Length: 303
Image (cartoon, rainbow, N blue to C red; front, side, top):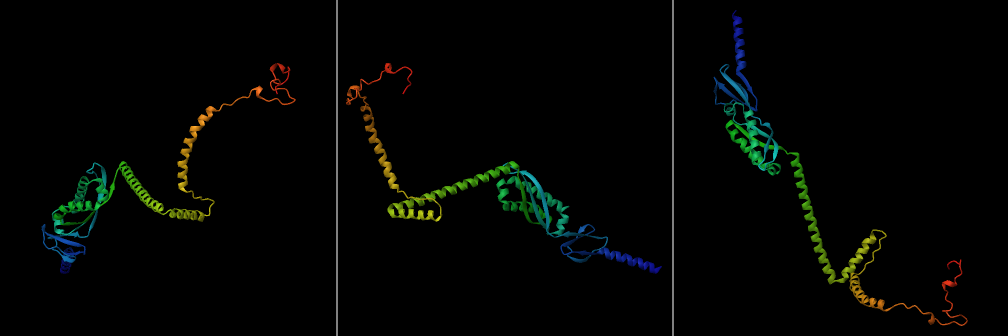
């Protein structure tokens, strides 16, 4: 009988010791509540003991938690509807306050992140959401970190992942980017033409001062064409000769046009009379040999 009692006592002691011994991992901290009252000392990693039935141990994870924020739809400051999602990285720095000051700090952090994201959408413009995300990430981090400090939670970083736009807005942005690139290409082409014209003007000035430079340039052009091994024949033609022809041609037209009309009006073709034709020896006079319609025999064909 005594042995059975000792065995029972040993079993009860083993159960109590087993319930009193707790193991805390390296990335966790233990918070002890004794009769519901928080103990100031936070248990570190390793083997620790509590009073069975009297104490209750809560373990808190100190690792960085990655929390995706669901996509939030909002209207930007320039009245454009967008959907923005983000991700929040945070960890618990004060386990006691994380358990005492808020019922569920994970759920609370998720709600604060969603409301802060909607608020930052309403305060920003579309261009800021697309191109200036670093500043928006910093602003969003400050907005989430303000209530999180009282909960013993530290915000490591906040990042906006994606910005979804309506299809019509995507087409408008694409047209705007295309027009901007077209404008820049035209400006670059016009600048190139301007620089080329300046260089050509300088080259023309040099060739005007040194006429031999033009001849050298023509010879160089002939050499370049001949190097291609084609059938093209290049004949340099002086520009001065063309100018001379242009100056002479209007003068000839003006001088010739004043004489020709008078000559055409004065000269009238004269038909010789029959009497003016000289008689040839042995032949009758021309006026006697004229054939009249009555002299043509009937039935004869036309000559």
